[in-house]
Length: 595
Image 1 (tube, rainbow, N blue to C red):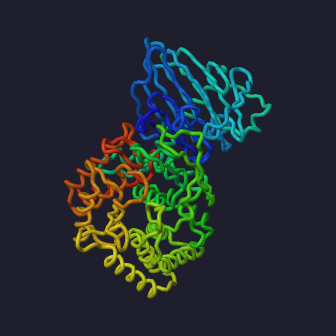
Image 2: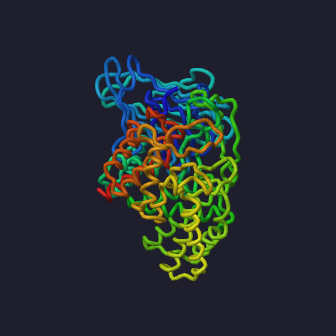
Image 3: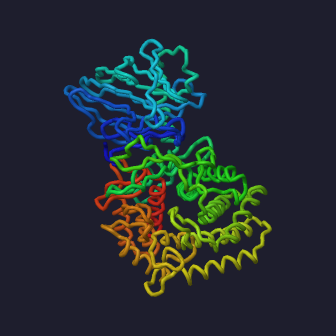
């Protein structure tokens, strides 16, 4: 099984796929990020893939076309060279007006002659269903199983190799193209229907249009003087993980990629949903880069999903706003490199995570500063959020890391409750709205005093994970980013030093040192970028750059980041991870500000 670093992301703001360095699509969820995978070899050798073979050779180098999420892989054979272009078109090449999704693979000859073979083995519902193949004439097949279906076509025509497996091969010369299209369809749309092979010109147009649309979006990003190419790539990833119909943003396009390979089970989660925290932070980053449409889309998504009431707010949602994301295990799948269990759904949804209030108020404040004050309906939602933070801040919660043990009084959560009160007061003043400002100010000050007295270990000179605890937590590095204290406050300088020394490992940073009852995990890349951001805010630019570069070294050759990393830099966890990419952008912007 390929290393996580060997995978490239394809996405169309609806679903996603991962392509290995060898040219095999080993993961694909369409038509949505959170639907059952039709290729899941990433999690089990027998769970389906779309493979590529080159006679007398193979792939030799890859890159994304500049400013896009279209992957170009160089193919070399005994007597020639070609390039493979992999993409998920923004529109269905066969029926652009419909909400179908597709994978398109185009092999283009560069010189000489090269023989290429595709092997398509879909296994619907995470490998559980071997599809029924039906021939529609002229080399076009459908694959049907359960509530899933694919329309499969290739220029030279497809043939049945074995049960549930299609193949196509061709010898391609310079300037020639071979096109494989896998278009998602509902089974009832395929049953008994007649299909002709798609027009090659239409498939070529879909490729050109997708490249153009990605580049048009990327051109709207303001440049960043620090790691400009990397920041652009991180922005593209965040955009790719946005579900266009609703504005939701998934935390990652995968499930159950382990956070440790050191033995033991348990650190395997499903991240194909929209977390308030991750998506609000990502929307803020995109706003900083000039993409405020995404921020507004997510703001409206949350308001709709919560039904406009704080008490109905959940930690995470399905991409269409679904609230019930029951967590279950798929014991049939062995897991990535044998690490299990494989999970679908996420039990964090109903947890109490008090930081959600602060993230939503921060986003609302940003949107107002952009010239969009809240209307009457949204102001009522804001009032409800601030009141919830004011009433509940004294409660223990599960915190930013979704603690599955007993709830604790997490310092980060208390600070975000302070943010909710602080931004609510600012919004009331800026929008000339009525609010109980005297009571809000008193509560804001009460939270502040509690954090400074109960959340700071004066003996060690550091903020801690939770009230009454000596455990460290890198999440407190975010305190100045929220305006709770200045970056150069002595307590923050000391906290940054303590966390770097106690949680640092070969330049990277672990997220906490508390015993959570689970196997040890790798370094947390977002926390490493947070440390760099904090050091930059303290004008410790040489140290900040050193930490920033350590995190940059964990990017793959395509500029993608996982959630965590081994000390060697090997990626761990679901991939690519939105939280890491947004932390990368924030750290780069902070370094740019202070350089």
